[in-house]
Image 1 (cartoon, helix red, strand yellow):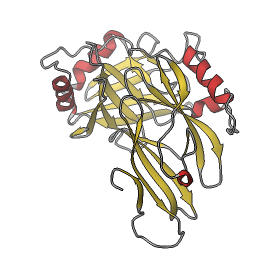
Image 2 (image 1 turned 90 degrees about the vertical axis):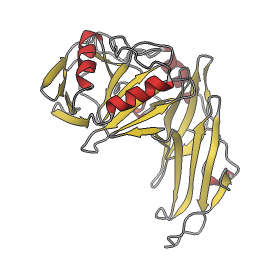
Image 3 (image 1 turned 180 degrees about the horizontal axis):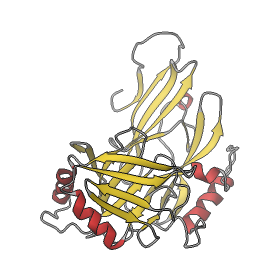
Length: 310
């Protein structure tokens, strides 16, 4: 994991590398440029903090004084996730050429209420970040090309703006809804809360809502590979620490560190447990599990009960 100016870079074990920046307003919007180790083309994507109301509404990218409008499925479309918009075709190439010498990029899109919304990203460090990826993938001096759709991701919508029910969606729905113990089933309303995490070129972690409580929410984890979909179990040596089978409390994915994190909130959050895991290419490894049983006003650091630092 490396940082270059306002951009962070991560390379997975399979060689897939991505450079990402967060919006200046800390809204949660993300702008990413990535490339698979065996591919020539870069993938440019934008993830707004709130879903755009209509995937066919235009996106405008202003790089300093240069303006690029993406307004059709041939120019921009969501792939894999309904809120991950990938830029395509010759316009994507034109934007890529403008990003390198640019200072900032402002993206205007339509939010879920139909209101024009803007997210601005600094381009400070982008060139260095992509050059570092070139070095990692042994592509130093390679051409900056970006026109093709993302590799191994299916469109989230068809040309009639209807959600695409692909094979992965069907399998995930079947596996989850057949589980015992999860009161929340995958349907048209809850599927918007399912979020995928790309672990490698062929592996995706799906985080699916399972239960909602007053102070905690529980999610079920599933691992999708080219062999199918199965529950993803997080190793833990403490059965009372919040990990039960493939369910986890309040999960978060840290894109900078590449860690999956959990937090079981006891009391007012001053007791409970917190875990961290990393993906080793085949399974999850426990990095650290901390727990505190006594719910008081102590500010002492929670003790490590399992993991490498225990």
